[in-house]
Amino acid sequence: MKFTRHNGRSGLHGTYNPKHNDREFDLDKTEDLNKDLTENNLYWNCIDKKIFRHGELSDNANTFTDVEKGFYNLVYKDYVDGQNERNIRSGHRERCRTTDDLRTNNKTCPEETIYQIGDMNMHVDPHVLDNFRTFYRKKPLADHFFEA
Image 1 (tube, rainbow, N blue to C red):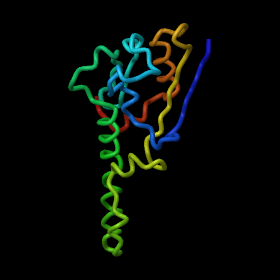
Image 2 (tube, rainbow, N blue to C red):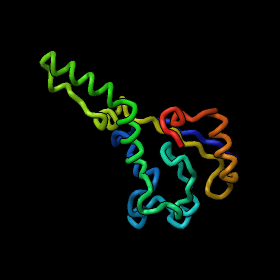
Image 3 (cartoon, rainbow, N blue to C red):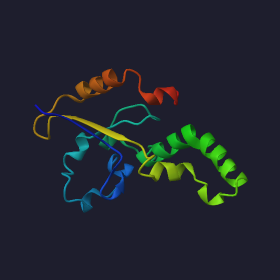
Image 4 (cartoon, rainbow, N blue to C red):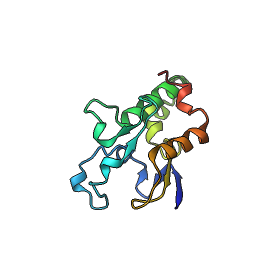
């Protein structure tokens, strides 16, 4: 059985779009996804802190885009505001940025790590993969920022 880890921030078309992680797009318009298997997808984010199956995602669930924006506002807003004040005082208003500018810049955007054990024909139980994630991270970074 194959184990794969993909790590990155951006590709040929710029920064990774978080919409591909939570299937926040019309599955009927994709050629490279088997939408019959989408129901097996599991989703986790640092706000909800729960594992959801694709069919369990409600209309008011946090999208991965919402989660990224919330995280960047929480973690970087004070820094960005302070830097913008310094830029304005020094006469360089054109250097002012937002947390969304950081989130979408290929040098400061979120880094994505995807772990996969097996393939669509042979794979481990989802709990095995989650145990690996938990063991690997010991305490997820998000636990430092978000309370349950």
